[in-house]
Structures are given as structure tokens and as C-alpha cells.
Image (cartoon, rainbow, N blue to C red; front, side):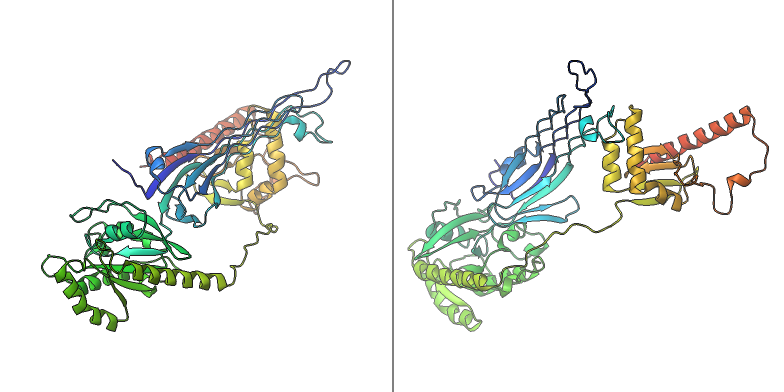
Length: 495
């Protein structure tokens, strides 16, 4: 049975926003007293919270699908819809949030950090909020927008002060059990530890955490064994303790050769940018199992060589507890010194979010098609406005056209070379397809003829009704073919 999970993929769906309400207030002697439709409620967010009481991602391994609450619909008498329930997901401290492409979205390294991983949709405005001097009684309301939906990857990196590294069966689990209240699985066969263990150690006035990761073997950086899979839990540690087995009976192994192998594997492990490499952190040597006479002799023999290489060496036994007190105080001193140094460092510069300047809220991309160019409008506002529009309501469609024109979409389409009847798509993928019909400005008619031509100079006689009908059907066929081409590109059904 799985008891520890440090990597999981979550399938999230934030709550959808509620639709706005179309309502007209009715009073005595005033059957039409004005619009009073309320706004829809916002959809519920999905929030990740760094919780010190959570130690594994096991619950999300069993239940990876999570959803936020939907917002309520607006109602008459200016009653707004209920807000969607926010879903809070507790995760262990040290969890990294990534998208499906591997880009880091958040690093929850401190308790209490909150990260909105899936924002809920916006509630639509009711007709009361849409009323203005020019539009006194709107006969439409805005629809709620859908909440964010997608996958995110949660990856746990244990936050500990000290990490125990070494070969399998070197006694790391026994050492963490002897120094703390942790009770890891201990047995006399390799790879007993299948997941990291975390313990809390008290040394005088200093309290620190110690982590035990699965054993490393030669070639771990190439995927052998289990250690490389869990070396990410060593990234955030202040100090490393090399636990060397002085009582091993395997041929060709001794404390010096074991240490060289472990150092090579640690050097091959890439740490994230901005962090101190593993081999540049404080390192101690723990020569374990000196309760065995032959192991004690071997420890005395190799101690001088290890000290010449610059390591502080401690001869310990997890059975007789010899040397554990000295090791405990040495680790506490390193941790306390590191904490003092971190406290003395200047506080990181606070990130100030300033409002964006007058940047363009959308872009127009021209895409070639078999039956003419396709003009794709991309941007947060146009896409959201389309999602909020009820296309069965002509007044709502007109309101959308006014918003797009005010934003400058028509001018940008004209600059891009679009003409009347051109295919315009708003959004990525299939999007929403329109047949562009430019509006008339108050100053002069918007000319949509190709550059170098002028429709006012067309001297041809007026076309007959049959000719106009034929040209109309030709345009409709070309637009239908363009839509089919868009659908084929979306589904990948292309020859």
C-alpha cells in the first residue's frame, strides 16, 4: 500500500461564474419602473495552502480531481447570485507547483503561503448594472465566464535542516530513529527506506529537523537505484551527514570508496539556479556501527584520511548510542550558525505590482487559408467578452460589437487588410467565427476595398438580382470552406 507520495498531477476545475439576470421592476402604477436584474456570483477559486501539518501528497494521489463551487445566478430586485465556494487544498511545506510544460508557478517554502492555482470565473452583470444614459432599459445581461480548467503538477521537496546520505543499509534510518522520535522502517536488507523520513531533534536550545532519504548507489545519477528519485529532498538542506558503514561485508567496499561514490553522485545532481551546490554545503562524516569490534578498528584506520580531506569525523553507534551526543551538538551548531547568517542578510526586495500602462489589450494575427485570409483576434478582453455574450439576443450582440469597436478591434482589422465579409476568429483554436461587417463612423464611411482601389469609382452597371444572389452564395460557400478548414486544423484531420 502506498503511504508516501511526493509527486502528483492534479486535474482542477475552478467554479464557473453565474449569469446575470434580465428583470424589470414592477410597482403599483409603474409597470415598467426600470431594470433591476442582479449580477451573477463569481466562481470559486482553488487555492493551495502550505500546511505544516501535512507531510505527504497521498490524498491527492487517491483523489486527483478537484473542483471549485459555481457562482449563483443573478435574480430580480437587484439580488446578486451567491459566490462560489472556494476550495482550499493543504499541501506540505516545500511543495513546488508546475504547469504541464514544467514551468514553475509557485514555490511554497514557508508555512501559510497561499497560491490561487485555478481562478474562478467572473459573474455576469445583470441588466441593472448595464443601464446607462444611452441604454436606460437593457434587454440583456452578461453571461458568467467559465473557471480555469487544466492540470498542474505538485512536487514535494522536503524542508529539513540536515540530510542523511549514504549507501543502502548504512544505518541512516537507525540514526534518525536514535536521534529523534521518528520511527522509520528498519531491516537488514538494502533499500529498506522507500520514501524520505523526517525527524525533529532537540539539542539544548536549538531544535532542528533531520531527513533520511533512500540509499544511493553508484550510477544513481543515471537512474540506478532509488536515491536519485528522492535527491530533490536534499536540495533545501543546510548540512549533509555522510553515514558510512564500517561493518559492511560486501567485497570491494570500504568507507573511503563509499564516500567517493556518494560525492560523485551528489556532484552529478543538478540543483536549481540560485541554490548552493550540494558539495559546497557543510558536510560531516559519521562512521557508523563501531559497536562491532572490526568496525571500530576500521573507523580508527580511516579517520585520519578523512580528516586530511577536510571533513569533521564522528565515530557513532546507533545501538550503543556512542558518539551521538557529539554529533547532535555539532549539527545544532551548524544549523544555528546558518540561521544567524540568514537573519543577518538583508530582506529580499519586495515585489511591487504596478498597473499596466497603455498597452494594447489584443493582437490581430493573419492566417492564410484556402479561401482567403483568416483574421484571428487574440487577447484577454475580447475572449472574455465573447464568453459573456448570449448570441441569441441581438441587443447583446450589438453590445459586444460596441465594446470591440471601442477597444479598437475594427481599426486593427482594417489595418491588417480585412475587407467586408472576411472571416474573423476571436480566440485560439476553434474560437468564435464571425463574418466581419464593419460599422459606419460618424465622420465618413469606412472604406474596406483593397489598397489602390475605391468602390466609389466602380463604373460597372448595377448588378441584377440573380448576379447578387450568385455572389452571395459564392461568399457563403467560401466562408463555409474556411470554417471547415479551421475545424480540420483543430481536430488534426488534415491530409
